[in-house]
Image 1: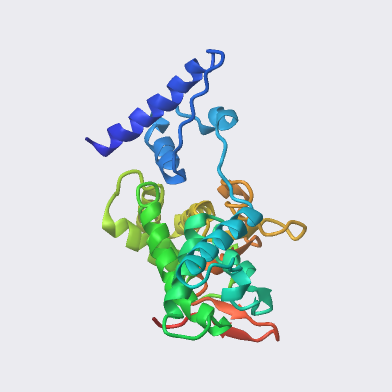
Image 2: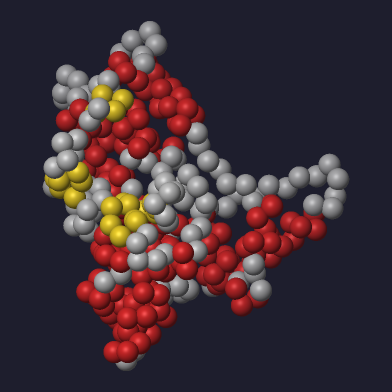
Length: 305
């Protein structure tokens, strides 16, 4: 089946649900991944699909901090109780109490998008790293984080491939930077010129929202180029925010917001020069992010694996 037809069928399903709402004592629930919904919107824009019309019908599944901790606790208890003991095993019995002045379980969750798959993946990497050792130490978690971070980077690119084919190229713009930068630093000629030509040279991929912007920027005159690059940078940060790669601080009075904790969308028009962008800690090691330590010194977050 043609890929476009698949997403048009999903659109038809969503629109049909409105009619079933008229039937009392009947509730139909359709579960869709975020990337599938995003691509459905892209594919059906020419048919007048407007996502805001469906906001009242959509409920995002979000896991609370306490729920994820209970999940990890149960998995650790099941694994170690089954293999090594008949007594209950607590998370703290296996993992160190603290990592970089944080409780180990909080440190692990801070490197996730608050999803079970991320938390379980990190814990599994820690257990693999500790294979043959007498304990899981803070260093064990730190070394496991490198493999985990690169896996998460790859997983995000694959997860959002249908909606944002150029995500991998946009991630490269964030490499080797401090954890927090201004939008004006992201939107510089060197970054956007390289990104524009890299995306434009590949050719149009499905409904890649970056391709037409990159193509116009690459082919624009010198007078138009600055504005074209800014439009491209705004769209890139909008996408990076949407998939959870960065958080955004829109003003000095507001905190950093991430899509998995706040609104899933960010209007690109709000991205002005002084807006701050912060890479999610989950990808520090995979993007070689320059992190400031407790003493105020900077250090690279990457470990070769």
